[in-house]
Length: 251
Length: 279
Image (cartoon, rainbow over all chains, first blue to last red; front, side):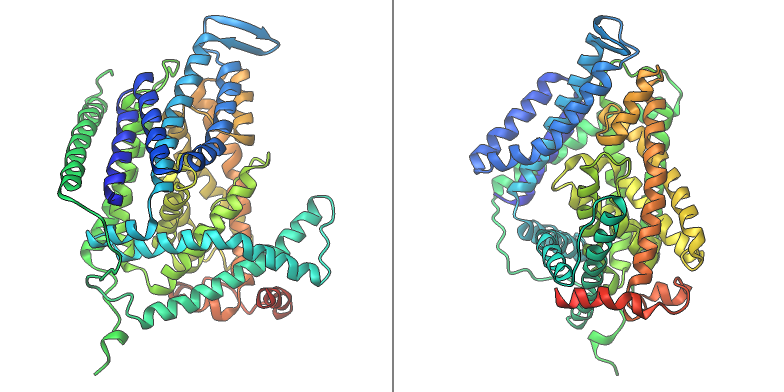
C-alpha cells in the first residue's frame, strides 16, 4: 500500500475521533486500528508502544478526575479528601478512550510506514526536500544514539568515572556523558552539512528518488475521497465554532 | 564565472516571508480561539469543536511555517536540526519518566535557537514534535508551544542574552511563562487536563483543594514550565559555550549577532573532546 494511503486512513480516523465525541466512534477507531495492525503483523509492537503512553495517562486520569472532581454530584466513595464520583469516572473514561484511540491509530501508522518511502512520496508531491531529510535523519540518528551513549560511558569509565550516590554525583556523571555526546553529534552535523552542500543540497529544483512507491488508481481515488470527506467534516465543525466565537453566540 | 554548486541559492523571498508570517498568525488565531472559547464548565467531557479547531489551526500553521522556513535555512543549520531532535527526545524521555516536575525536552530546540536564530529554533520545535509523535502521538497538539520556545530562544540570543550569561535564566523564565500559557488550554481541551508525573500530581493537588480544572491545569503548567525552561536555557547556554569555537562559528547567526562572549576555557573542553574522540 502507498504510505500516503495509510496516512489518509490514519488522518481520517483522527478526524472522526475528534469530530464525533462518541464512545462508539472511539471504540470503533481503536478496534479498526488494532485489526489493521494485526493484518500488517505489527500488533505486538503497536500494543507495546501504545501501552507506554496510554497506561500512565489512564492511571493519572483516574487519579486526577476519578478521585478529585469537585463538579461531580453522584458520590460513590469518599476517602479523606478524595471523592470518587460517577461524573469524574465518566469524564476520565471518555478522555482515556479518546486518547487511546488517537494514540493507537497514529502508532499503527508510524510503526507500519516505511519512512524512506513516505519521504520519497512527500517530496515527489512538492513537500520541501529539507523536511524529508530532517525526518529520515532524525529517526535514523535516534536509533543509534543509545549505543553512542553506551560507548561514551565506557570511555569515561575507563578514565575512572564512578557514579556517586546523590544528585551532585549523578549530575556530574550526566555532564561527563552528555557533553561529549553533544560535541560529537554537533561536530558530525557540521561535517554532514559541508558534505550536503558539496552535493548541491541547498539548490532549488526537483529531486529524483530511486525508491519505488507502490500505488494504484484505486488507492488514488480512495485517498482523494477520504481527503474530501475529512475536509468537509472538519469544515462542518470548525466553521460554525469559529463563527460562534466571532459573533459571541452561546454555543 | 562560478560553478553552479558554489552559487548561494536564494534563501529568503517575499513568498517565504509571507508564508512564515501567515503561519505565526494561524498559531496566534488558534490560540486566541482556544482561550476565548474555553468552556467554564468542563464536566461534560470531550467536545468536538475545541480539539478539532486546535489540531486544524496548528496543523495549518505547521504546514505554512515548514513551507516558509525550511527552504530558507542554510545547510549547516539543517544538518544540526536532527541532532537537536535526538537530544530533545533522549533527554525528554529520560526526565519524563521520573517524578521531577521538569521535562528537559527542549534543550536541542533551544540550542538551535541560540546557534541559528528564531526561524531555525521554531522549525526545530515543530519538527521535534513531529518526529517525537512517531513514538508518542500525545505530544503533537503541543507543537505550537515547541515552536514558540525555539523562536524565543533565537530572539534571546539575538538580543545578546547568551553573551550576558546572568540573563539566561531570566530569558528561560520568560519563555517558560509563554510556553505554559500556550500549553494549558491545549491540555484542557485535547486531554481533559490530564498530565502524567509531577505535573499531574500538582493538578490533582489543586483539584483536591477545590480549584476548577482550567485553574488547576494552568497552575500545573506554570509550576512545571517555569523551572523547566530556566534549567533548559541554562544547560543549552552551557552546551553552546562548551562547543569548540570552530563548531559555533560555522553558524552565520552566531557570527553576525555575536551570540557568544569571549574565548572559551580550553582546558574544560579538552577532557570532553577527548572522550568524544575516543568513543
